[in-house]
Amino acid sequence: MPATTILVTGASGFIGCHCVLDLLNHGYRVRGSVRDPGRTGALEKTLITHGADTRQLDWVAASLTEPDGWPAAVDGCDAIFHVASPVPTIQPKKPDDVIEPARQGTLNVLQAAASQGIDRVVLTSSVAAILGGLSESRVYSGEDWSDPNDPDMIPYAISKTVAERCAWDFCQSKGISLSTIHPALVLGPTLETDYGSSLEALVKLLRREVPLLPRFGFNIIDVRDVASLHRIALEHPDAIGQRLIAANGFVWFREIAALLTNTYPDRKIPLREMPNWLTRFSSLFIRELGTILKDLDVAAQLDNSPAKKLGWQPRTPQEAVLSGAKSLIDLGIV
Image 1 (tube, rainbow, N blue to C red):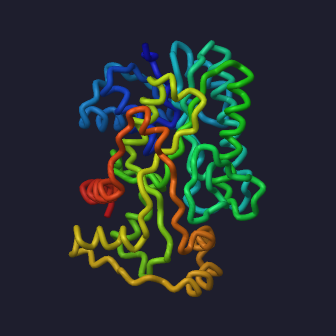
Image 2 (image 1 turned 90 degrees about the vertical axis):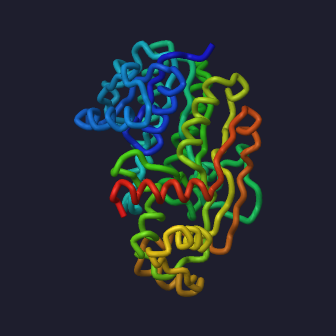
């Protein structure tokens, strides 16, 4: 019998909002934590538009960096989806600006859960905690761990790795059943105009802000499938103790651009690739390019078979790309 009242942290975010929608549409009662309670009215309208019964939803204001708000947030809940985590839109000057809030925020939530006797948590980690700094053209699984001491690791990847390690250690010490979900690049439809960082690649392509395409690619997953995997992990006893990868195929950047061009020819999206030497040279001036240098011409594969054994059936990367692009256009973002 699955838990019936679920706390979703980061409920206003791209993944968190879809988790709320998926849970409501499957009969759960949901409590969503948000930093800004002023956004909840608009969020409810959005959820109603997508068929949710928001009578089964309530909100609580809580911040990762403030532990005092979490005991009240978890009170009366049967399980937690800990989705909230700092995601920088640019690389921070101080890595601890991302790492410490992620680590301490996770502990704040888990300590509150333990104090209220909650014994089931599904945590949103990332493939960055599996292959961050390690990109090779091979298959990665939930058995792989990123090394936070690797000099190639970006702060975001370190933050996800450190926070997840803390979660496993804490839950083991307190007898909390934990599953972690590891999304790749999350595309698919955004429900709001505040789309976060996941869809930024599509935004830049559709706005023709990428004159030349770096020779790298992404493992991709649809946000709706990330949300459903959280729920499936909650419902399936075999998911306890597992690190489940949410990805369904690798796609080169040029293939994404070509797919968008074929679907939206009027956008005139550039299709020329950038030579690797030019990407390396340009990284001296464009900070974001420095984070992908190790991934040039690398097609890392991710093993999603443990998730599929639980009955998870993800959409194709192509559907994730096109549904994401359509939502950006429909909402007037691009």
